[in-house]
Each structure stands twice: as C-alpha cells, then as structure tokens.
Image 1: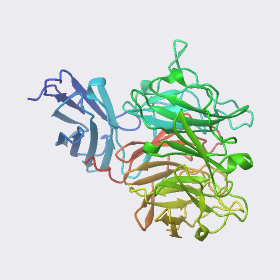
Image 2: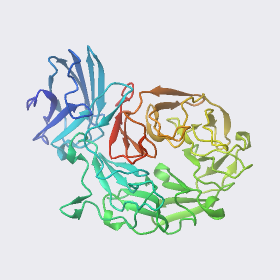
Image 3: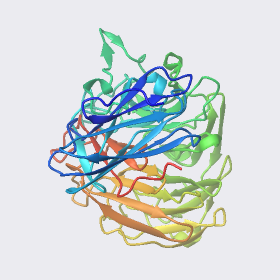
Image 4: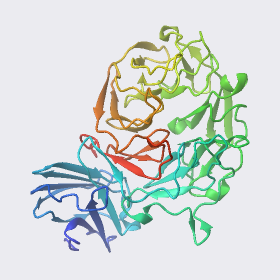
Length: 479
C-alpha cells in the first residue's frame, strides 16, 4: 500500500507500509545553493534508489518535465538504516547525489544535494559560524563534528575550544550547521583546551560511546584527549601515556578495530615514538626506526607505512607492526619528503605515496607504490603532474579524493583528483576544480563517493567559512 503524496513537485516522499511506519519522510532534491537543480536542463528521467541495509532495496524512476518530477515509493521500515541515491539523466546533462545512512524515524526530511559528475560547487548554506583553517572534521553517524582550528594565520592566533555540529542530511539549510551557542548555552561543552592545528580520528565504538581521539596545538604546547560524541562532557584535559613531543609535528591515523596511532613529533624522543591508543585506558608506546616529523602514515598490511619527515640521510620509508617497533625499508631510498600522503587500496594491502616537497622545497611529481608489507616491496607509481603539498583527502570505496592543498608557488590549489589503488597498480584522475583554491582545509566522505570540504585558506590568504561539495563521476554502488 502506498501512502503519502509528493510535496512541492521537487521531492520524493517515502512512506513506510509496515507496522512501524506511521509518518512519511520527505526527501528534497536540491542543488548546492538549495535551489531547483533541474532549471534549464530539459526533460529526462529521475532514478531513485533506496537501500535499507540490503534487506529491502527499491529502484524507481519518474519522468522529469517542466523542471520537476514526483516520486512516491513505499519503504519497508522507518527504523531501518536507510541510504538514498538520486541520478537525474537530463537533456542538458546528468546530475547525481546521495545521502549518508540514517534512520527515517529520526528525521522528518532529508535533502539530496545533486550536481554534475566529477565537479565541485560551493555550498550556499550552511557556513561555519566563524572562518577556520587547520580544523578537523569527523563523521559520526549522519553528522559531522568540527574540532579546533584558528580564524587567523598569525603565530599567536588563538584556537577554538567549542565543537560545531554539522547535519549531513540537511546540507542546504542554514540550521544544518548548529550554532556554537544557542541562547548563550554551548551546543557541546567546551573542549578542555583551545586547539589550533587539529587532527582527529574515530576510535572503536563501545557500549553507548562514540570516542574520537583529538590531537592539537595550544598556545602553551600540545594536547591529546578523547572526546565522546555521545557524552561530550566527559572529555578530559589529557590522555595519559602519550609519548612526550606528540602534537602538531605528529600524524594520527585510525586503525579501525585496533584503535589509532600517534606517529612522530617534536624532539628526539617525540620524533622517534609511536603511541598506540585502543581506548582512553589502553595506551602504549613503541619506537620508530628513525625520528620523524609530520610523516605520511597509512594503516596497510597489518601495520603502519610511515614515510618522510626524517633527518637527512635516514630511510624515507619504514614499516611499523601494530604496537611494535619500526623497521626501515631500504629500497625506498633516503630522499627527504614533507607534506605527502598515502592512498590505500580497498583491501588495505597496497598504498601509493603522493605529493609533498623534497629537500629543496620543490613539489614531488613522482609517486611510490608499496605492497606486500610487512616485507614491503616498492616500485614507481604513476606520475602526478598536479602534485601539491598538504592536500585535504577523503577515502571512498572507488578511490581517495585529493582536494586543494599548497601549490609550488605557495598559493592554495583549486585542483581535485581521484586516486585509485589496486593490488599492484594505481591511477590518478584529474576531476573538476574547486570553486576557489583551498589549503589547510579538512575533507570527509558524505555518501556514495560524494565528499565535503570544510574551512581552510582561500587564495586571498584568509580563512574560509564556506563549505564545498564534490560529486564523483559515478556513485559508488549501494550493494
């Protein structure tokens, strides 16, 4: 039985037909400015896919006429995890978009922000409550939490101690990005410290917990602590057992069920250490083969691939088994490297090292493929002609987006690329540019290959309040 009716002509109304379905869910399809994406693109077909955890999948279509379409489709349950994809094949071109997983019962409406394949656009609303660069963005269910960052590039700039929340299901509503305060009351309790350059990764969820490891720079030094998205008032000012020197010169990486790692840092001991964090009460430290600052790190082959940030003449690459000590990979050479990053294959067995600067400050356009770790075998990867330093990155099933970064002349880059790694090969595909150059921004996956870019520095060398959204050439499969 079908219940409910289409609203405003530019949406789909999904309504449950089971015993737990008492209310419709309105799904609005909009462009990045919150307007009608069909204007001026002619007639065509709208393709809607709804996946409820694989147990119920609906594919429905409707004609697009006069810049509008109506779809009404039943769903099996309003309490099942639900994902939505929309593809619009129109005379003037294709548009696509998707939502992250959500529970229909918890939302009266969601919005699918659509755009041309392989392109990016500025999001009209929401905007950050204040301009920020060097912030960290972490997805938690259908929301993102934004940590730290600074509103100025000055050396003595003060970081943020309030957490902003972004609803990924209501991107083109002004209220999607919750104000940092409401009627004078913080949405989240203040962080233990104000953070400038900030990194954050998820730790394994526990019973009724969603812990996030946060690492950042303060005016007085460094800070590492665990923030629980479900109990934010429990954040403590420090994480006991972290190696001395961990902070802005370290790199953190998520390890899935194995927790997270903080790699390298300041000083002799700090730069030579790795802190392994399984939970706030399970922390241990091991050693790197050589000291490193701001290395590129990836979780591959049951351990960490760590590259760059080393002293002159030391091994460029080493492999660190989980909670073990690092072992150099001599075949990778000793060339200096700063600001590079790793891109992994879906099986997390192979990784490609891309971007960064060499000892002379020149951008590195060669890449290196590492596979077979812990007995790592390295080889040359594809040339990266648009290489840059410090690109924001977001890992998706079809590849990893590289967004913006710092170009050879020191200005923010507008470029985006999709890097795909297979077991013994890799490819780098140039995609559409960002609306404006961005450096020192944060990126996160939205859904089905769609990604968001948050904050950063623009070509005027001022921090950004705006968000950008980028669509893949094709949506990742729901099943």
